[in-house]
Length: 347
Image 1 (tube, rainbow, N blue to C red):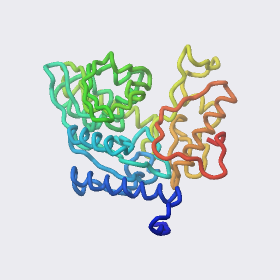
Image 2 (image 1 turned 135 degrees about the horizontal axis):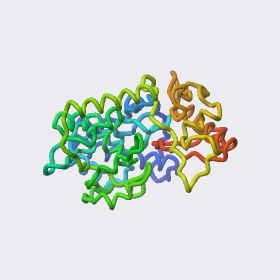
Image 3 (image 1 turned 45 degrees about the vertical axis):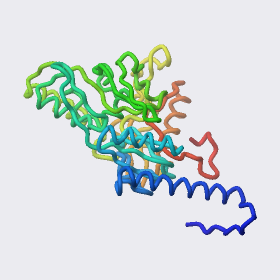
Image 4 (image 1 turned 30 degrees about the vertical axis):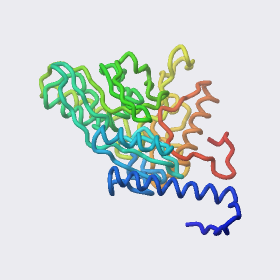
């Protein structure tokens, strides 16, 4: 801890020391409030790298793993009242946490329940993993979700980014959701209110937090559903670098009507990166996967800054060579202040 000068009575503290004093007061207040709400499950200065699929990133000022939606709502209300920023971390895929970590409170929901809503719908809490949802649905003879086997992360993260696979969007199977605003206000929304689009949902603009989602399902034979799930997982293993830390696809695919892709090249971010000769390109411990051009992997010892620089290199190379502006699918979390000596062009 940095030593600070004690200010004599009657003398005004310098602005920086006043800021530190305000931060200390806020930290002490938050610590007491979190302790009263969740006890020793509120942890300070928690390394986040082990909680992400990239295995990089700094620490959270505070981390709490709520066990139920009601507890998550109470945490949102507490942080809102204290003026503390909140970040939601699900399964840790599709995100890149800054080396400097995340300020404020990180909420990482765990557990969650699944149950029938009538005969043809399932309600699942946001903390449930996609694979957990698939297994539950198959075991209960519910068809419609089996092709999502092997999808990393939680339902909360998948709905936030409207996850896609093999031309399908996860939002296509959603009938309604329950969300909480950052002040803890809870509301139920229909699918039409979610503004689902490719890699997009209402939550990205509203900053609401998913509590649960209702999925439409049909009747199916568990054996047949299981076979479909296994085929989906096998396809992912053949085409994606699942044995090396990554965050999934880095960039969105180009969209007809918005982008122009040269003739003869598939409308795929991975194909553009591959044709640009970037497979195997590396910065520090970050490397473009040789299996799938739209995956960047932590080949060992990568930092978040290494990965972000390599993302920018891929974007610039594809733009310069093919005139296509790739847009990130990955979400940046935390304190991304530029390191000394770097201009914005280096990102």
